[in-house]
Length: 191
Ligand SMILES: [Zn+2]
Ligand SMILES: [Zn+2]
Image (tube, rainbow, N blue to C red; front, side, top):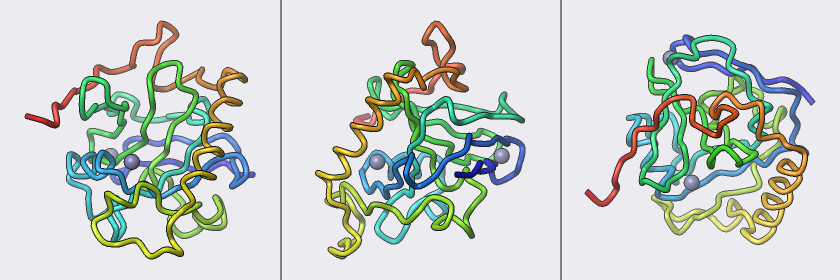
């Protein structure tokens, strides 16, 4: 278990996770079209996405993430009125992570915000694989694909246990009334 330092590219926004490990979180590479659209929105496709268009994400309880500096630079976008809350820093468009609403106990922290590019596999374990590869930009080799069934079971089990433990609070992203800490900018993908 170790605490991972968090920072945006320009180092205005900084933070830290609680002690985490490969066992307690889920590391996946998400190839879905919405994660790709988020990268495009930020103009960060080169830094965020791998050659298949996948985003390296580590899911942890939302209360395990603390922002210690630069909170006023945290911003939020939703790709549609009911889409996930996608958090980023407006100082330099570094992605932070994705959450559901206030009751949701997890955040999928995006690799760019974790200051562990060199030690990521050691810190967090190897990813469970690429998921939603039907949206990938290039065919994902079979050996890199995660088993969606076992990944889904693992994610649902974690989320239920984090929910039972009340790990959705305290949150940097939603206050006790369940309101987001900054007003999300809502895009309409269809327009
Ligand atoms: Zn920044
Ligand atoms: Zn995705």
